[in-house]
Image 1 (spheres, helix red, strand yellow):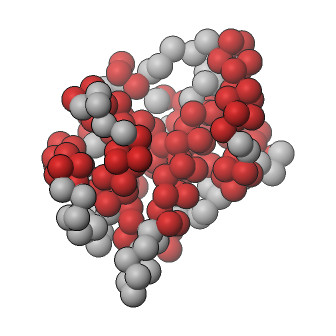
Image 2 (cartoon, rainbow, N blue to C red; image 1 turned 90 degrees about the horizontal axis):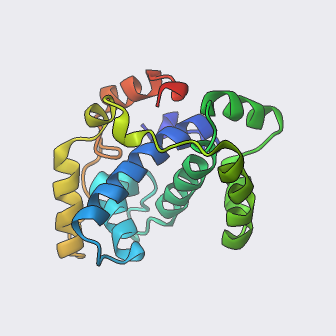
Length: 180
């Protein structure tokens, strides 16, 4: 799976960001008290995302955290548009990359997306999309909750990525971005 990841592929990051957004909102609805840091670490470890970047000798997964943040940023930006697919293609033409999105400070990023929110005012379609239920397995929520309760649990799985088996991930990629 790692070989298929392009570090600056906006479409991949958009899809992963969508799934991460679902995971985050679901867990925060159940556990409103959880800190963002604890939730981030639990998702990275429980989803198997850390395995994409883990250095076996040190068990560090800093790259997974960068990937996580890049996915969320990409989704936060392009989910604001009524046709995300069109704007992602335009972003490619303008040479926008995930790394460039990550270099923007948090304050500047909020300043960037605020006028887009006001102009397009696209309602959040996540809850209304029936395909979402097929994207995320229930066991990923159980694993995340286990990692929240016990921070010392090992990183989960070698073949899993955001709780989706490899062939299911390909199915997710085939879903047109504009439909979500």
